[in-house]
Picture 1 (tube, rainbow, N blue to C red):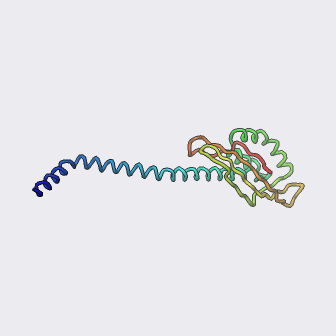
Picture 2 (cartoon, rainbow, N blue to C red):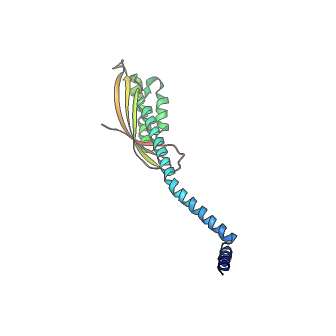
Length: 178
């Protein structure tokens, strides 16, 4: 009698676990594992993407600050073109409007300025905007000061870019800070 009960239990289990049911359970377990894996890994990718975006904004702000402070009366147009290429919005229009007067002063005074030290920090960022602070030390000479004197600048730059992650960061405002 005992053997016949065991045989009945075994045959009942065999009938209950069909190949279709086994496949369905395997697929559900695989999907559950994939969902858990994605939810655990996705925040890491998002954080890495935010860090990359912030680093790109920081690099763009740093470079524009260097271009803004660097000048040579002999090649003024190339330096100002670099600033304009990294600018947008009100900063672009303000800088472009003052460019002719600035050039007259720089050329008349034979101004030369380069950057010997630069420090930059990211204040804030999101996918389309960022704020960067840049400190620069720039040896500067002109007709009144023929031997270069170190000038220190601290700039606050607001950057923006189109919502496309591959679009370049552009400076929309530049302010001197104390």
